[in-house]
Image (cartoon, rainbow, N blue to C red; front, side, top):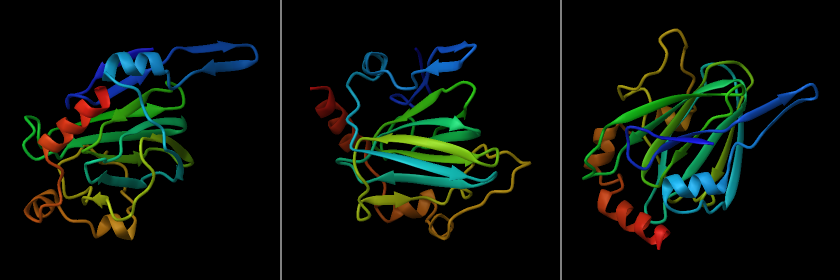
Length: 197
């Protein structure tokens, strides 16, 4: 499995080997040894999420209060999606920096999103499936969101975004920062250190 760190330190793309034969194919989208070598700690899995979306559906931009936050390991077993990460950790050297990776059923690549980093995805085809491994279960009191279209993110110009009412009503990055709703870099680094110890 190949690991590539993205523009935001601590976020990674993982690309496994795919083994096709006359029966079909075999692939292992998550491999603990490769993950731990890249990230520096294992992935605690408290919940798995599965979504199916039509073309244009945007899910996010989401994050959770830190600690503990919620890290995610996301791959696309069907269709294609654009996975976007945004550094929203106040005080981070890369605050406001984003990166994007196309995930697909052909590549079986995945993106790891650490606690405190914002995450969104857009389905690029109908019937696109996203599968998430999550370090924490859903906690509605700790979950936060930012309006995904109010940011300069690389959504394709030829795809009409479809948002949930909740995401459409989410604050902008500036509004969330002014309201004290964003995680701090110091809190996130302290949490990462705890995970590595």
